[in-house]
Amino acid sequence: MKTFAILFFVFISITLFSQKQENPIPSTEVQIKTAVLPAPDEQKASAMVYGYDSKGDLVLLREGTNNLVCIGDNPARDGISVSCYSKRLEPFMARGRALNAEGKSQEERNQIRGGEIESGQLSMPREPSMLYVYFGSQEDYNTETGELANGRFRYVIYTPFATTESTGLPDKPHAPGMPWLMDPGTHRAHIMIGPFN
Image (cartoon, rainbow, N blue to C red; front, side, top):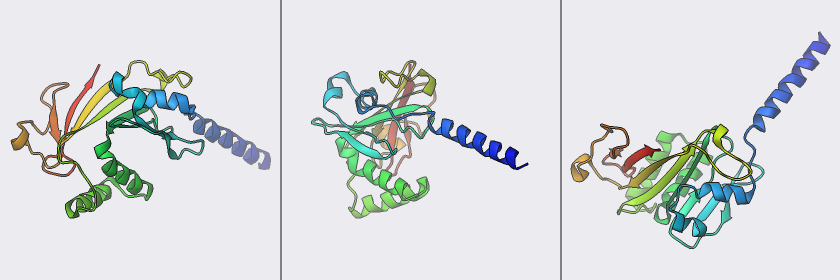
């Protein structure tokens, strides 16, 4: 019985280890190449890029000189998803990451950031601000080249406090790929477009 318990423990340990290694953290160069996939071609080389270190912590991989901030794929999550957004959104996004690290739920993050925006403590642009997303399956991702086959785009335009009345957009899509307004009337209001291809 003791031998069985030891063998079972070894089996579980190997299984857990192999699962943990399922999504290895690519090199800095590959992470940067992947992180900028959603960005327009002319903006990729100069975007600021965040990615992950060997411990799985989000860190700055490259300083940027243009208007975009790109976030690399989180290796702890299944699938590949990278995004780039206007630097004017960075205070809002960074605050969300900090609250997430504190273990706050989505609802708590929304309430806290909403209150901070209302009080003026947290900066949120009032004009439309762009976010680009590119995503796909883990199986289609090459960790050596940073290429993602069969990926799809989604575009998000943050328009804080916009409503269906002020934009003329519906609050749900009526056809695949059509623009629609999510979270209308709130600080999180944004136009969803896609996914495409």
